[in-house]
Length: 51
Image (cartoon, one colour):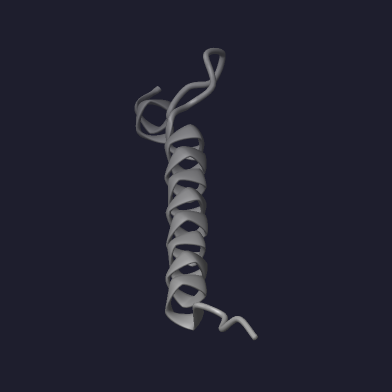
């Protein structure tokens, strides 16, 4: 009878979890950067207040 290599499976699962978390973090940063930058036709709020 063969034994499962539990520690290897656990290690792979942990790597997968970390990779997924890193991808999620990157998506959030990209979304934040897109939301922070104004669209080409829009005036930023601080400049709109001056006009």
